[in-house]
Structure formats: structure tokens, C-alpha cells
Length: 250
Image 1 (tube, helix red, strand yellow):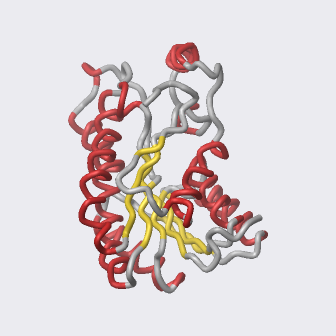
Image 2: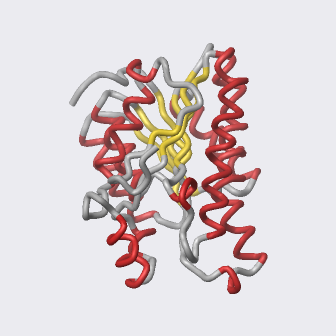
């Protein structure tokens, strides 16, 4: 338990499980109060809330579709009402699924882009004015190391994550003058439900590429988010940090 985020208020999308949950717990351990959203995952959301409450932090949660503008407006309204203000935004909501390029339908392509890239835009846009008005904040976007190297059967996913990195870099130029620091994290393959949903063949192929010889754990990604959200991250602007087990060496 620390105090690097004491008196700070954070909104995390996709916070009910995986990397989002790990970041939420790490933030709470550093003194942060939280609000998070999930998508049709009430049981895991309840578990996450309970863990945070046991740390003595305030936490709220609702179901939200980050790709839907009305849903996002409601999410940010409820988060602001609950927290008072939003100091830190973590855009972590995402979906996965490996499929050959020939088999990707326009509908599947749009869904992937909408959840990852449109969702990151919508939630950021909804929080941006409030952050600027209060004199600053932190925005942390969750990308992927596959945005750099690509991967077979994940062209839609890689495109969405690469878009998030480009968005992060571009927005950081405008946001920094308002006291808002925008950065991204590009995790390597991490043991989450998303990774578990990929085929055994894909997992074996990916594991063979990793110099560290194993997949990461969500708790190994969360400290990077804590650093970027705290005063330790004061000199990071438009950066993408990539805890990835050596899969990409930048």
C-alpha cells in the first residue's frame, strides 16, 4: 500500500477483469478512488468492487458500451457525479478474437475498430473538457505490442491498436498545454480472458516468440499505469511504454 495516487480520482473502462482490474487494484492500493465500467460482466465487476472496498477506497461501477456515444455520456456523467471529478482516465476496454483476413467481415472489422479506437476517442472526448477546466489530468490508453509488429489472424486488432498509439501521440501535443498528459501502454501477451480466447495454435506460436519464455500477468502491466498516473510520470508526453517480455524491443 502506498500513497502515490492519494486523493486522486480515476475512471477505468473495462475494469471488471484482466488488465483493467489489475490497474484498478493497483490504483486503489496507492490511495485512489475509482469508477469503472464493464460490458455484460456483473459478476466480475462485483468481485472487483469488493476487492477495492476492502482496501478502504471508494468505488463505483456501471455497465457501458464504450462504442456508443449515449452510453459513454452516461458513463462519464455517473463517474463525475460519484467521484466529484476525473483526474485519471484509463481506456482499457477491448475485445479480441483471431481470424484470418479472408474471414473478417466488415461487421467484425467495424466492431473491433469501434470498441478499441472509437471507444478510446469517445471516452477521452467526454472527459477532456472537464480535465482541462480543472487544470489537468492523466489519460492512459491501452494499446498492444502487436501495433508495432503485427500478427497473423489479427489484422483488425492490430489496426485498432496502432490507431490508439497514433491517437495518443497526436492528442498529447494539444493536451499538454492544458496540463493533461496523454500516454499509452502497449502490453505484450498477457494472461487474460482475451488471450485465453485465442486458439491453442496461436498461443503456442506466440509463446515461442517470447524471449522471456512465458506470457505476462496483469499485475505485471499495472505498475506502468501507476507510474504514468502519478508524479513519477510528470515528464512523459505522448509516449507508449511496452512491458512485453521482449516480444518487441523498441
